[in-house]
Length: 184
Image (cartoon, rainbow, N blue to C red; front, side, top):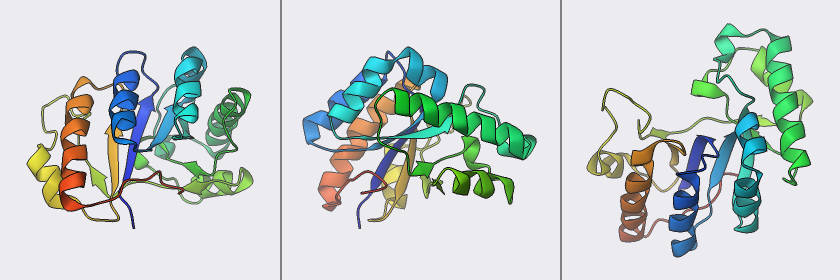
């Protein structure tokens, strides 16, 4: 089993290139769950991620709304627009879908996912890099929770993610853990 490094809410024109640089230096591939409108605005980052062997999968269209507050029709529109955009940008047909906040409305999210041939996924280790109150996990805390089959959640648009990733990659090496995209 391998550790899956995953990034939500991008692509971000400032931080995603730095994340891609770090991953590239180590020869590591990851999974990026992207926001449709950001992918459309930053198509060169989508092209770069694909060219470097990363997975690009859908997250949401624009508003990052919890599925718990959306109807099935609203969820459908979100994923349909995002998948169409990714296809237009040259991405392989998506196979995974991570809803915002990991919120899954039963059965609506799974029903919509099935119509699009998507598997709904979440994570096993949230780094809390997104937390504005500073509760992000330290590298030691992430390390303590890291297992060979962890799915690690990080976020492209967050400045501290780049520093966290650099340390995390060192820890993966120290543990002899392999890193791979989720669908690999």
